[in-house]
Amino acid sequence: MQNLWYPKEQKSVPLPDKNLSNGTLEALAEWNKRTIKMLILKL
Image (cartoon, rainbow, N blue to C red):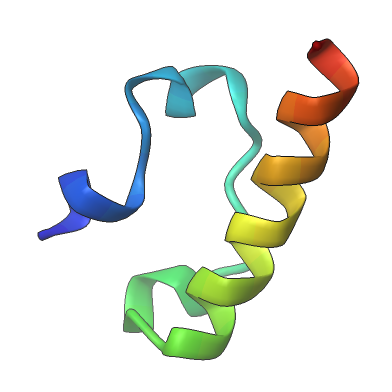
């Protein structure tokens, strides 16, 4: 299920706090926001 959340380019994206291991929606939402911002900056 993690594959659905994380893109194949996740290696280039720094992982968030240890909260991600808990699989909390808040951590995923926060990480998604950071990922989107980084992707936009790369574009």
